[in-house]
Length: 480
Image (tube, rainbow, N blue to C red):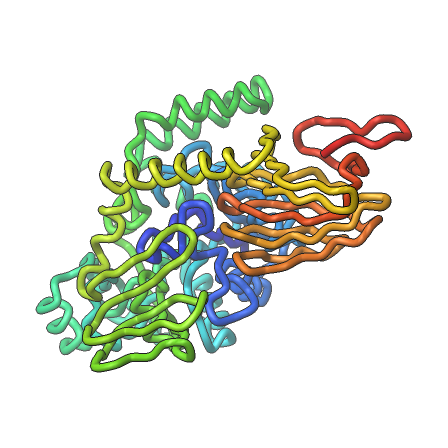
């Protein structure tokens, strides 16, 4: 048995808490661990670490490595292009198949689900694995608790197994209108589609060939290219060219809903797809200790910079971060993705970023760095002050100072600071102190702006590791 974790989603419906640079699977929601970390920990109860794979775009690779240091880098499968889940799973299946002489069962799970009763979850998936021999795909369904319009539904056919709550799938219904969702709930003959799929690896490959022939042809060409010429930059370019013309499509639409021989196992565990802000409210993950509500009801508030007054409004979502502020009627949350991708919103974002860059540029001496920019805005005989702007996905070298002592104040953005062997998540308001002879590195998930106040030893820097190929001087110091 092997597992594939889908961790490439952008989490648009959770904006601004979730952003393209730091989507929801990497967030900690009411916990010390991210949704991705908890997903992998659940899988450890089912499969070995070496048999867990995570498929992601290149931009999230460093995030995964920081959150899951125990994962071997070869188990991180980088999508050549982002084309929804069918292409991601299809490409991952090709990579994984090359590594196994047998025909393993592959469990596909999203990385952003909230699950309690983990023992029951494990037992459900074990039951599903046992049913893969005679069907094309096995999926996991959840008993509906409300007329949800943002989930897909599975209509149940006859019982498939006497020993388990398993049924043949009659048909799928995708995101119904509220009236239809209400009638489905009353019928008692349906389950929510959880997005978890279980199949033999060879079966998945044959389904890709049958239902997504363009994708299958591209994967075969990639496999032949690897065998003939080996891997490298040329291969990456070749893959991007092949995938450019393949339409983006979900695994549900592309394959699963076209299959005629499917079993669904009813999950006996608490489950929620953390799809939008209402999910936080359902699961008690909304902060309320800083909110004063006056003549208001049903509002969802997410703001941790100070007190919030909500006066005379009902059923609003009010959420703010460094990426922006959302004020939205709860029943209009499905519009967020559309607005985020609109030309008007992109123009506003571009304008604000340019204005902020100009403000920082005018505040002192700016030095371009491969990881971003450094602005020296004050220097005395004893102290120095800088603004560091680290671009999304970039990182400074791992370095240390012989005498210099510094303190970082996080102004905006999110990321991590490697301090010795410790990886510390950072966000606005965080303060990190670095003593001499302690190795450290700044890593940005989204654009990270820090104020650095230090002793005046600006040239006292030695690099231990640098992703940009900058080498330290033999026996000497190099300016960071």
